[in-house]
Image (tube, helix red, strand yellow):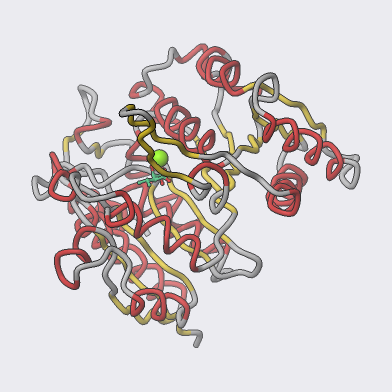
Length: 356
Ligand code: IPM
Ligand code: MG
């Protein structure tokens, strides 16, 4: 029997409660499909700051490196908002992505049929289905560029730098093309090449890598237009290839089309199969501990872990099917509509387990 070592980073706010439900579901599929799971917990974000004084302890990096995959909840909260940039919980999240070399972030925006009524987008705009894969570069760009503050002649200013090297663009472009090849063969690369030099290099590099993939139809779109097209006609997209910051913004937008930001999962991958899996939403400190959190994005992140890292395809499918089934009747408050049953975070986890 295979036993997988999973490092669990519960984080802050609703992090611990959503991760608990995801672990429940992972335990359930492990029994059903005959594999073992061994968990190790480690600190990240605000909870790490409180416990040891820094958002990303070396011990956390070491534990993650010694495991097959990482499951992460969310980090951040008002308690730590006044800390200096590199001491904030978010710095721990960016740090762990960089330390593990996780440059490719996959964020699938799919709509589960029963949730069409929960989407703020009209059903005729959504069409029969929504299935967009955002491929976001995760360890470069403005998130990691040169930054600082300076005061000249008594005037304070601050700056952040968007910088991409050719190899950084090449490797994420290849992930995008490979993804498109496995799906509908359509890749839309998003940039701001009408204004930004880094985007012009991005566009030219993506086009050059595209020559290796004649079977994939490559289009380019400016990010402002893409933000608009996503709500006007989301069905035109298959794979969206984006920089770090554009992917951050567009994936939140895409998540709302699918009903709620509480539904979108993600995988962060590097050069090999190792990956970190987390919901795209934040730590929602306002609802932490109330039972109102939606655990489905984290549960679906476990399904992605089973697909991309652990290669347990049947278990992954079983989770996705159970989520689709559970949504027919059970709804956390963020996706509740009349005629369905309002459930807590734990009840949603139980409902998914019962359907596996
Ligand atoms: C995300 C989050 C993070 C990001 C924050 C919390 C640093 O918004 O994963 O999308 O911007 O990458
Ligand atoms: Mg984000």
